[in-house]
Structures are given as C-alpha cells and as structure tokens.
Image 1 (cartoon, rainbow, N blue to C red):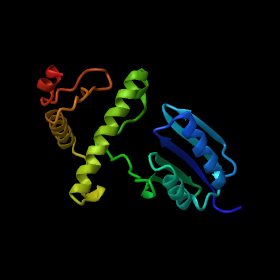
Image 2 (image 1 turned 45 degrees about the horizontal axis):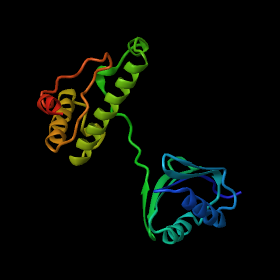
Image 3 (image 1 turned 120 degrees about the vertical axis):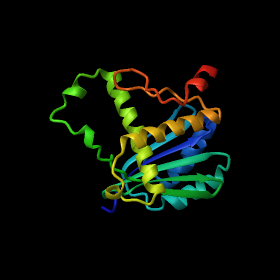
Image 4 (image 1 turned 30 degrees about the vertical axis):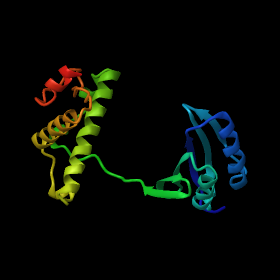
Length: 201
C-alpha cells in the first residue's frame, strides 16, 4: 500500500487557459486528482490518501515549465507530525516543516468549569480566540528569543501585555493600521500605544 499523504496544490496568478495547461501536465505526474478548480484567482488541486513519492522533483519540473507561476504544495503525511509545505518558482524550491507549539500554561486561567466561555456569544468566542493567538505568539517569540524552555519561562501577564503594546506601537510607527485589541466582551483594551495612530488612520 505504501506511505500515504494528503496533497493540496495551489498556483497563482492564474487564467483559465493556464489552469488547463497546468492541469494537463500535472496529470502526467498524478494520473488521478480528486478535486480541481479555480478559486479566488488561483488554481487548486487536491489529492487525499495518495502516494506521490516524486512530488518534489515533479513540482520542480512543473515550475520550470511554468516559470511565471508560483506554486505552493501543502502535505499531510499519515504519520503523526509529518506535515510540511513546499514552495516552487521557476525551478527553485523551499521546503518548510510544520512548527508545532502548545498553548502556554496560564495559571490565572485555571477554572472549575466552562461557565465563563459558555456565557460568550459567537463574536465573543472569536475575540477570545484571537486574543489567545496573539498572546501565545508573543509568548513563544519572547521565549525563543531568550533561548528558554517553557519551564524556564513561565507566563507573565504583565510582560506579555507590555510586549504586545510595544509591538502595536512599532507597527503603527511603520505605517501599518493595527486593529484595536478587543476583550471577549467587546471592550477595547487600553494599551496606551496606538491612540494617536488610530486617529490618523
């Protein structure tokens, strides 16, 4: 049976004629494609539970044949944590393994039940998830910069909030429009660093 993976290939920019020509050549490498379409100006090809062992060499050749097209191949292997993504352009390529990070342990978020989260509407849950993603990204960025393990770099709410505020200030100073930080209840956080920039934008 062999080692099986799921493959998702996208390519852009795309036209109907280019899409058809890429599809025709792709089928020389992968005889059966489960799903293919054009979506949001990109070509999309999907294959699940397949054994495309020569995918990298095939994609290098495909990108040479279509040098003005940028290809992205996402792969989920059947083994745990065997996920990776490859990029191809005019015969050149880059392969990136998935980076797996756990949410950091936050002591003050220990609770006995889910009553707090259950009280939130959909928008509140979305804001809570967005806030958690931002804070987790900042935490791991600081931890990696300091070359610390999680056990040596416990969660510090004041530090994370200060780092987030500084990131917002820096991005605003570079001309980016930074969305206001919102708490799950919809109230804006006061970070003291973006008010002037928000008024300008």
